[in-house]
Image: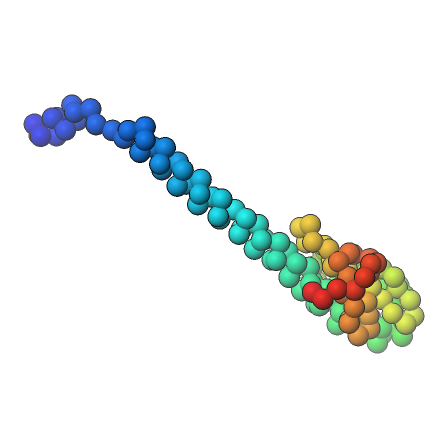
Length: 133
């Protein structure tokens, strides 16, 4: 018991230099980790938006098979076909011969023209130049 009292009575602690070194190390680790995390987050948002679109394409084709036109397809009509579709999926540019499906997740927007789903765009309305996802 006396050893414990003696240890508590001693005034020991960390020096200012030791604390500064620890803070510098933590700062370096954060400088490495934060940009990496943001890159992972951006890629995840890209892939999530693209996956939402890929999941909506069969529903759009089923709508066409039922109605012989893409006109009139909207998110509510597609959810009747597949209730598991993400709410971020929107449709636009509908006609009797083609469609545009777009999705936005986070700050990442993607869209694809159909049928065939060969031209991807970095917008929700199929505008702009086609890009490779």
